Length: 100
Image 1 (spheres, rainbow, N blue to C red):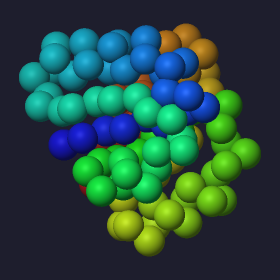
Image 2: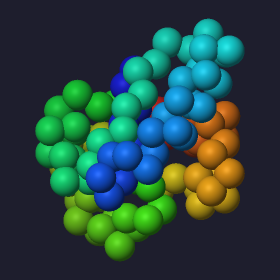
Image 3: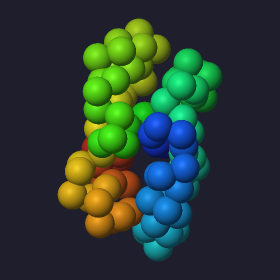
């Protein structure tokens, strides 16, 4: 399974991605997690199973949700508190819930 986090430039979520990878590893969950710029959504929809948006780009929600829905890829905005505290476990759980 591939989880992709999208933010303004793909950089601000990199620490969160590392925390999510650590959380997945401790639970023996086989998952690929990457961060990219929201501008890359068309490319990321081709290979991602789940898309999470950084709270700072929630203003692009309508546009990005339409694209994800058309590609049949679950999408959500990362919980703001979990993002702010870099809670990889909580964000991983949020992504896994979307995959059901």
